[in-house]
Length: 126
Image 1: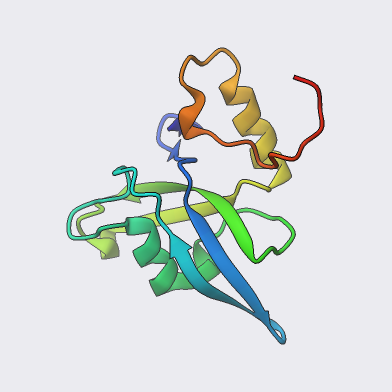
Image 2: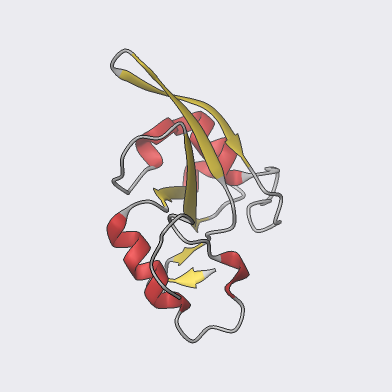
């Protein structure tokens, strides 16, 4: 988990969405939940999966190139036991501005297992 500000916590825990471009429409084929437990809220096995299936990409706050397999970070706000009183936002880890912020949050942390690099093939030196 990473604090963006005092009210927003972003989880980069391995959630993925699988997309398909069907003419001019982007279709969500499925949502992969890593089963970390953070997203199991109230009556939902995965609140991220429920929001994505219910509201689709309207939950997206990021910008990135469309890929068939996208790792996402997510944030939830409100009363998650009642979806009408809550909101889940997603952002692709490939979003350049978010990736830069997330990388900055990693500096000095002892436990980075919740955070993945936006692009594991990045050839930059360690």
